[in-house]
Every structure is written in structure tokens, then in C-alpha cells.
Length: 342
Image 1 (cartoon, one colour):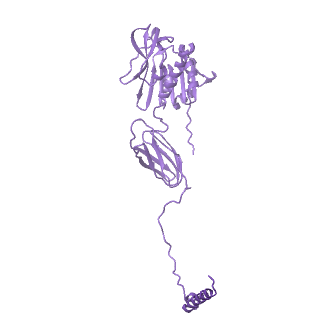
Image 2: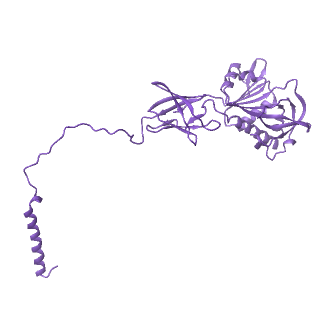
Image 3: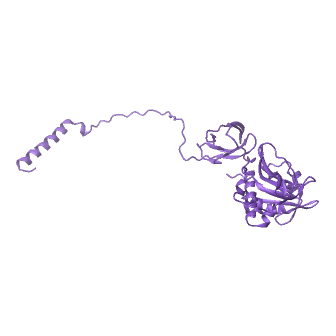
């Protein structure tokens, strides 16, 4: 039993087109294990695919954004993200009037999900960003890269992120990181590693298509339980679930043990389930069973059948015949002894 959920995977929307969106799209296609689709707005009323520049409608772009697992918004494309169920949102806002032009040299933070991408790399020697939009992270946000104008002055946050409920969000406040990839060498490798680490962290949020739990096996034989494992953040907690089959719907609760697993016993059939808080799918219990299923022992009533004794007697019931055999064997033994035989 296979459940197919159509999703474009990673979707990048760029409005307007620039070098940052182009190089980020190429890097994600190389490092991501999900389908990557990019759409760029080249004219006022027309979107184009970044794969072949084929024109696409705004509605097609909007539908792709709504179904994306990871949604990247570059520039002024944020209005198309309304109603998106993405678990990761990567925001790269357009530079406004408050953007500060100059050579912004970046330095990595020691504690962030993307810190491993810059280990051992001379990030402060990489090509500087071209401009920075002043933005202030919220309390609890992590900062991956900080920027200094001309390597002097106070460091400003350039790349930061946070967990926002069931959605993870990363914001990039600088433009010109494409120069890392264009230069090649260590800066290009760091750019690709940063894109991969950021995408991996964003995709680590709760999957809205599956919810906080998923079945270990979608199909089990009769007499075996369905096992759900906890995949949500934090410690496992009791989760309501609604089962629907041909007879109707009923409500139950998944109670997880110490290792984050919950068992449910169901009769044979096909069931659709919906978890509390979102997520669901289809599971099935086969009629076939590998073993004999335990069942109550029942005895069928039958008429008694009496055995009548026959008129014949068996030879073993004759005692004199047994004595005759013993006497014959004794006589044979005495005769052999007299003849000197053993």
C-alpha cells in the first residue's frame, strides 16, 4: 500500500531575478536530495521557470509554493506564499531604502545549525557582500553569519533563523553571496555547504503531511498490531487519532512508550487516519496471518457411541496357554543341557 503525496520539494521564487537567486538555485540542485523548482519574474506580469525559462502562470507558481516542503522567497515574492504548508521558509528580502551599501565582510558564529559549513575556512577573506539590510533577530534566534562594514565597526546579523511553531525560518539580510560561488575554491565549497546545511535544518521541521507520528509499517498481517513512532519535536505525548473505514469513523488515542512507539490493534481492513494537529495517511491490516490466531475453544455437541462386546475371546486371555508355552521353553532348555549344548 503506497500513499503518494504530490510535492515539488524545494521551491525558489525570485522577484526580481538577480545573481543570488541564480547561484542559490544551482547550488540547491546539486546538494538537495529533493526535487528543486525555481521560478523567476523577468517582466511585470510574467513568471518563468529557472530550469528552461519557459513561461508559467502566476497560479502555477502559487500552487507550487503552497505544496512545497521548503519555500525560498527572494525579493518581493512573499505575497505568493500565502497559505503555504511548507515546514521550512527561507526568506531573502529585497533591499529597501534603508539598505547600506559597501563591502560587508562576514564572519561565522560558533553555535548555529550552519556552523559546520564554515569550519576551518577563512570566511573573513571571502568576497564581501555588496549591501546589508538592517534587521534585528528576535530573542532566541540563532545567528549563523555576522557582517562588518569594511571589517570595522559593530557586527550586524546577516544570516539568522528560528523555530516558529511547526515552521522553521531562516532570514538572509545581505546581498552578494553569489560572489562566493563565482570565485570558486574554498569560498565556493563553503557556499555549497552553507546552502546544504541551511536546507537540511529547514527540512528538519515537523512534516505537515505526516504530523507528529508515522506508522512503522503501513501494512501488517492479521493478528499483528500497527506500530506508530514519534517523529515530532520534544518528548512523545499522547496524540488523538481518528480512524475511518467502510463502517464509519471512530476516535482513539496514541499513547507512546519510553522509546516513542505506540501500538494499535485493529481488525482486518483498510483505514485512513488523521492525527490531532495535522497529518494523516492510510494503513491496512491483511486478512492473511503468518500464524494461527488465538481463539476461544469450542466443543461441538455429538451423540455418544457405545461399544458392544463381541462373543469372541482373545488367546491372551487363556491362562493355560501361557503355562503351556512356559513348560515347552523349560523342556527345551533341559534337553539342551543334557546334550551339552548351551
